[in-house]
Image (cartoon, rainbow, N blue to C red):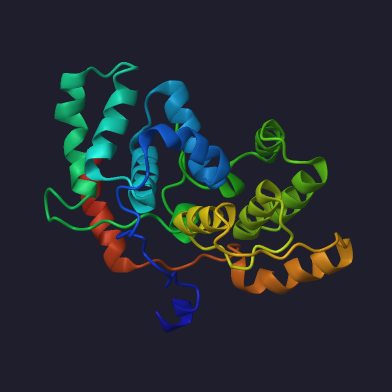
Amino acid sequence: MLNHLSHSYVGPDYSIQKSIGKISLEHIDALSVKSFPLCMRQLHKALRDNHHLRHGGRMQYGLFLKGIGLTLEQALQFWKSEFIKGKVDADKFDKGYAYSIRHNYGKEGKRTDYTPFSCMKIILSNPPSQGDYHGCPFRHSDPELLKQKLQSYKIPPTGITQILELVKGMHYQLACQKYFQLTHDVDDIGFSLNHPNQYFAESQKLLSGGREVKKEPSEPESSQQKLSSQKSTSSCSIPISSNTEADTELEGLDAYFTED
């Protein structure tokens, strides 16, 4: 346990947000483009396109939305309105899915306040299979498919090359930090990325003028040195331990997400 302590996620758990209720459902599409990390942007697009997400996607995305401030009532409305556009009617949703959403918010079962997944948990547990959209795109996507996705999001070719090099070196969180830099047009994000909800919060702060981020002339050598100095602390090339108690709680929650 001591050997792995330095690799454990010890930041905010984002289970309780001061911004609770301040996120409007009609703004989620725009927020997904401006302020969602790639993993959550991917899940949001898949939900909008397919009107459904499987177990892993609902867990990962549902808890993220909770963490950015979606209330229980908003969450029920959001998921129900999307699912009934697909093959799930209102009655089936109420019987098969609504309970699990209330459970996420601590209103059913053990009434545990479940926390959004950290980058470590997303990267190291429950890898996606065919038909799934959860997981970390930098860790779990085929490099060519990742390249195509980044191109579709208008990431410049030099940026895509940098991201793919970081992915090749198994520095997945650094790749996500580079994605943040490129989508927000900054050279130094000023923080070490460890959580999707942290990504969202920092993006909103930046876009609202809540903090200044340094922009410097582009110098490949200094940029490379900066990335190299961060690799030792931000790389996910080595298995990282997670919070055992939290994992046990989430395993108990799995029973409520058995619907595909």
